[in-house]
Length: 180
Image 1 (cartoon, rainbow, N blue to C red):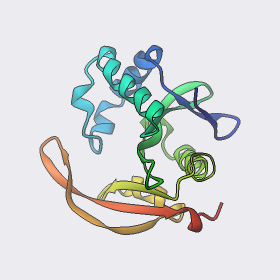
Image 2: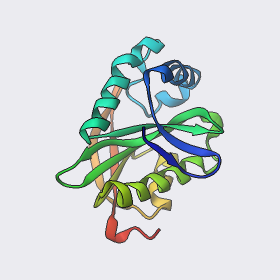
Image 3: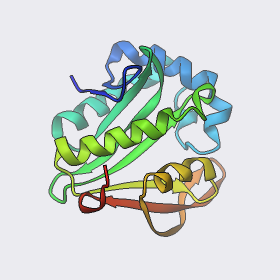
């Protein structure tokens, strides 16, 4: 089981089927807030919706092609942060994250992404880590920018959000540039 201790209060953990109700409840309580930037919310209508999703996350971990992890604060599930994709041959990964609204603005995701990036370079052996953010999602963009990730460009109409396409910015960090 993957567990990444961020600090005394914060931990990333591998998700299991027994966690599906916790995930659903947090998503459902934050549905309107999260829907502005996450395109998958309409597919999560019940805890049962997560059966195949969690199975896929577990398979990706086993194959080394992803590492989606639950974020726990004082042992309470509050969001997700992990490598949505890992390209083992290129030693490259992409980080995705979301957080329940009540925990925003406390620096929790900043610490988590920093810890996951460090883990990716030191434990997974990655050379490049990417983060893709909606161009207009200024709150999400502050995170890679504050950690020193380099914006590589804007990807026009990169993602479809329910009724429209939106542009996204690709950020990257190379192992040789990681200052921590």
